[in-house]
Amino acid sequence: MWDQSFARRGKQLAMCLGAAMTILVLSSCSAPQGNPADGKRWYSMHHCFACHGPNGNDGKGPKIDNPDMGFRKFLGIVRNARSPIMPKFPEEKISTQDVADIYAWLKTQ
Image 1 (tube, one colour):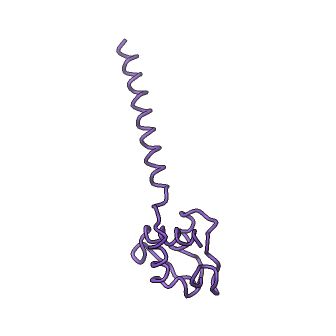
Image 2 (spheres, rainbow, N blue to C red):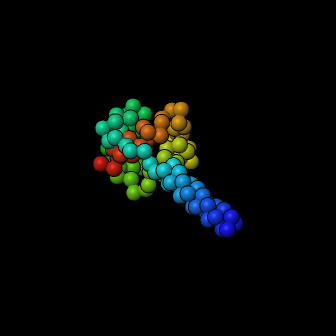
């Protein structure tokens, strides 16, 4: 009798821990909410326009307006573009929230 009750509680605990871990993983994978108005300002302040143009599609660099990639990929490129021309922007230079704002603004272009 005790063994069945213990086993049942163990299964319940395992299910709760599994659900909690799933929620934790999914919440850490989601992109922060971006603010397009702030994104336009950050885009200018970080001189993105110098290569990508004022609208993200009219400069000498790659077109980045209305990006067809997810936020995490975009963030990865901003952090480490693997390009000799584009500078790296670590968290100390531009926060993930600011990148989310730029991404949101580019989505409106």
